[in-house]
Every structure is written in structure tokens, then in C-alpha cells.
Image 1: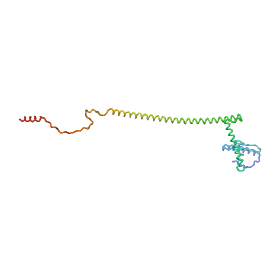
Image 2: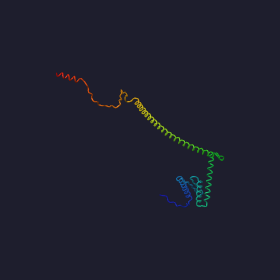
Image 3: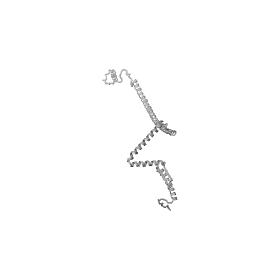
Image 4: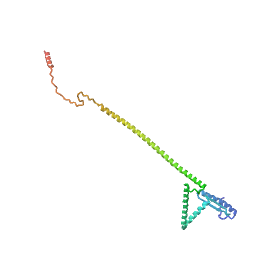
Length: 240
């Protein structure tokens, strides 16, 4: 069987009223805590019981919540009232001047100036802050040096590869020059040998071997011989 609907009105019975207050109060505080965690909201809750007992909850601190509430309420009121806008900006300017003055004072203290008004605790905090700043500076410096060393190693590797390639090219060109020199020397020796030893002999026994030869037919010359007469005489004698 489901629960019946409760009428929203004042409970007359004091005991029932106190029990209901205790239950609803715990539920309200629980919901306030949940919404501050889930939604990242700044929550401030204040509850007074009928016996003037205070119950409160704040996600940060009740003082900061109330100050923020008053400031927002005042800013809203100033926006709704243009006559107070000048005072608002005057307060903003005064607040900014105080912040600038505070920052300048902190800077001078970090530089080691105006330390006379600081106690042991303030000096310790300042020392810790300087050590943290120095640690951050050293880490940044080491990172930059590491990156530069890495970059130099990469450049060195590239230069070494280029040197190896150049040496290879130089060796190749030297070999080509040596082979070309050998070819030139061999050709020069052949030319020297051809100049010192001609391909033909100059001995011609009074004739020029290379001179053109001219041939000419001549008429046969009559020869006077006694052989035919003797033959005729011989033949004649044979007939006898």
C-alpha cells in the first residue's frame, strides 16, 4: 500500500512537528551537499528551528558565501540604480590600486627588498616561494638545454652522413681520374712509338719506292745471227 499524500500545513502536534523537522532537515542538508558536489556549485544553507536552534551547511565557508551573496546583491542593486554607478567604479578603482600595490610589494620582497617588517613565518613562506620559483626556472633551463643538445646531435648525424657521401664521391672521382690518366699515358706511349719507328723502310738502293712506276712498250730490235745461214747450209747438204 502506497504512502498517502501529506498536506503541506503546520503540524499542530509538537512531537510530530519535531520528528518531521529532524527528518526534513537531514534530507535538506544531504541534498545541499549533493548539489554542491555534483554541480560544482557554491552552496550555503542556514536553518533555524522553532526553538531558535541553528543548523547550517556551506560547501566552502559560510563567511565567503555570505560575502559573495552581499556583493552580488549590491552589484545588482547598483545596476538597477544608475546614480550609484560612479561610486561602484570608484570602489573598483580603489580595489585595483590595492591589488597593484600588493603585487609591487610582493615583487620587491622577492627581489630581497623591504624585508624588515616580515616575521619568521612570512620569511619562511617567501623562501619556499623562491625555492619553488628557482626550481621551475632550473627545470625550464634543463629542458631547453636538453632540446638544444638533441637538436645538435641530429645536426651532427646529418653532417656525418653528408661527409660520408662526399668521401664516397671523392673516391669515385679519384678512381675515374686515375683510369683516365692511364688511358692518356697509354695513348701517348703509342704515339711516341709510332713516331720513333715508321711503318716502312727508307732503303731504296737508289730508287724511290714510293715514286710512281711508268711502263712503256718498245719495238723489237732485229738480231743478226749466223745460225739460220748455217741451218740453211745444213739443210741443203742433207738434200744431197
